[in-house]
Length: 330
Image (tube, rainbow, N blue to C red; front, side, top):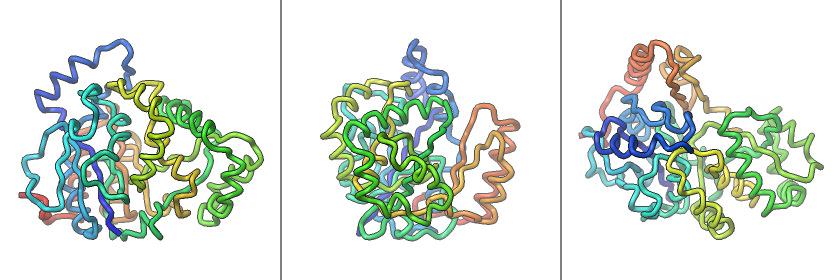
């Protein structure tokens, strides 16, 4: 089974990108969170992402590297595993330029040559220990966790997730789904995280699902099915150049996949950890050095104290476990 990785990246120091960004950022409809520089800045860790892939997941078939046309100077673009993808290669022209990650993500299934089985990475998610294909796919199906999160945060992100749930409830009957795929919704590997599944078993509507900060496996065919069903809604919100409260996020595709039963139960929290760098930078550094997890997410924030020192320490931590240049570097 061929498995591809997809990763998005932007160089916010590129003057061409900055000119376009500044041209659109002051629109009155843009949210403060959507135009935050923490969403776009590069902390210099990308080469460690590629080193991690080569050392810990050498089985990947192809890496589809999505940018606005930018390329890190150190990247060997002639490496046969790298497929450079520009936004115009897969996003309809009328929605470009876009600075909205959820718009970019909904069109990734259109990337030329993308395999049916692929894993989507944000550029803040890193592989720091040995990783097998079975971590993402088993029996041809994505590994995932199907548990409700009944009392989510009131953040803008969860407001957008509720937009997804509205469409999910329109197209799926919760009781039928949970009955048909009972063993997948009530799997023992979830542990206490599944408690709301039992409590809400007889409730008639889907509520928000727990969202792991994870590298997410998908079937490309899921995207085709979702677009066929709710393409009008996806197209209508593709005009959002920055994050907006009416956005539909990639969780729509993930939840659809789960409701179809196209997943294998897996406790995705067992080997994965998200570190908000605003409050847990030292723990993140320690986890990288000790390789305590297989995958880590380093969540950026404009309010990180001693930002330069934090990034320097994290860079040193990556260097301690991935000191050698990969074949992806010139």
